[in-house]
Length: 192
Length: 192
DNA sequence: GTCTATATTTCGATAGAC
DNA sequence: GTCTATCGAAATATAGAC
Image 1 (cartoon, rainbow over the protein chains, first blue to last red):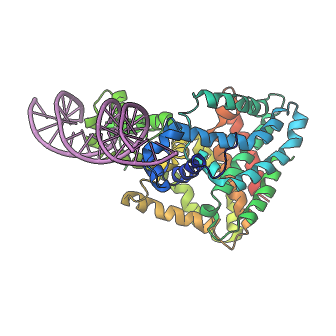
Image 2 (cartoon, protein in one colour):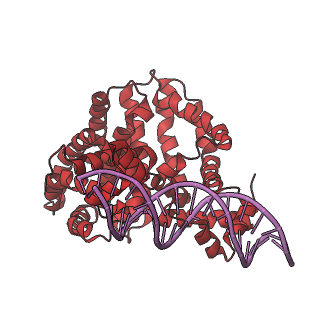
Image 3 (spheres, chains in turn green, orange, blue, red):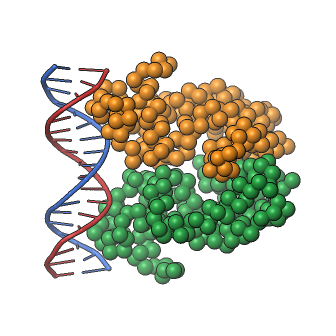
């Protein structure tokens, strides 16, 4: 499952991630990706069947990233458990966004593109349980709607403030300082 | 500036908005837009010079929407003024998102597409002062970073929870109830 | 594994009749 | 103001040599 980190396939994915974020998935051609790697477009087809597969593999990277946190989310059945766990889960989300900013930005900026891969069997297998787990919390009637809304707001706030940190607050603000404030802010949201 | 609400041009914009949200800007062809209106692709070019112009006009709709709120933001120079005004400004944002959900979703889901129009002179004229006004608040060193981060988190939370309300909390939750909880939640963020 | 060359499709945009 | 017909560009994807 974990590919050697210098392999051509991984280098393709790294370049694709960067270009998808710079120009958007639809406006990035395979020719451009290949060009940055010093190979030709045709060579990409040795590693990926279609352009979508490249996007899919990047999506699976995000999945792999969140497996630990999601497994925990899935076990939060009762109101008491969920409310107690959320501050810690939000902290983990913050850490992961900081460590994998590009990957999160890809998903934020290419939401329409990702709708193409939802039918792919590889995506379905990896995603069905994820959605199920999230539903167990955010659509759980045992938890008051007010608290579920606060959880969603916290997640949205974390993503907005961290992914757009430089654009929002200026290029000179230290990322760790922003992160510290985000942590404090959203903790006020999820802890009663 | 305000076009008759039943005119062909407005109907084109309405259909385009819907299709851009359903399939994404890049994957929506002019042929599809025309087809939904019962006209041909060539007829669209009587109203718009390019496909981008359609996206631009939709962007200007959002601008027109936020003029009132933005004018107020621009006047918030001091820390005291800004902190005092934010709860009310967040409330106005909530109202506008509720009243114009499709328009906000367009911008959330097609961030890459909008980067094509930043160079358009019509966009620059409308946008430069907007960014300037936001910078006056979110990049104002007179306001503690902690508070600016809270403001950004509040905005992100509002957008996430309201635009994704059905997907997040289920199709059966009443929108106004979600809005009420969002209001309460983000008020905890921006008021100290 | 990587190349050259090409097939195929689709799209944005234009010309000109009505 | 809307149409038919078409152009030209660019993209994904494939075939087959090396």
